[in-house]
Image (cartoon, rainbow, N blue to C red; front, top):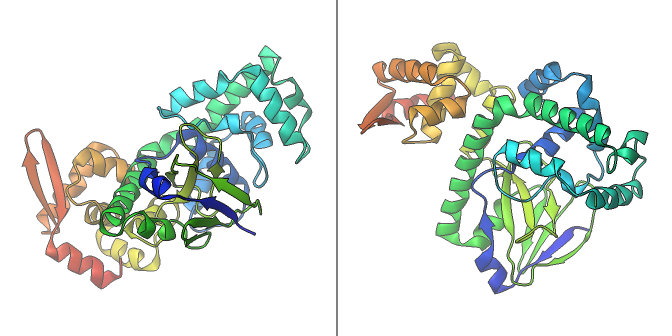
Length: 334
């Protein structure tokens, strides 16, 4: 049985699309993805780089966030803020809440002995904090500009869908493998097999894009000010999906043919501009995960070849792919 989210007219009106990923949700999901063997191609590049960066300190975090199973809610606060701000919020969780959530977790799986001391032992909390920061530094920090760019691009696409077809057009496209819209109920097939009913009661739902949540959605029915549901970026095979795979997995076959002509980084720069018309050099660098100076150099080379058109707007520039670039991308299948 799926998990069922019940909407009223007020709920549809108050349902929102988050503009960016939640840092701690992404960290939790990334830890899961690192430990599982699914999506080997789609996250191959990231998984290899991240695993090489981890050291044994991360074991405490991996103990608490397994590949599958329950995770305590205090690890993923629903608030907004920078990754560093939310990390501090996690580490400032009241002892009573940590104790209560670990007791609930123990009902579903066996916990390592050190977790019994986490609520009240300052040294254990210090070690866990160091482990959490190390895990973030290894799994997310180097990729955060890319994650921000991808989730912002996906949110923009969802906003376009909302304008053209309303929320009832957005909901069925969130995650076709896992989500079904049967008005007025959104049915979500949870990876854990969890079922139940969530009545939004006029609060609406926050839809949160996720780069690492490539399959299983995350639901928090108790989040404030409204419950949230994560969905994978590019789940409906939008251009964001292609860019996700280039940056975190491996380029698809068609992209390799383009890379053979332009070089892998320059091909990715061209696809990034085609997917984000009007992007600045800073945005382009963040999307591709390269330095701004390198992005400017690649853009200049592509402009010289007649593949990019750049307009200066005061101190900023806006890059767009030319008709020739779109023809090249189409011909290569990219």
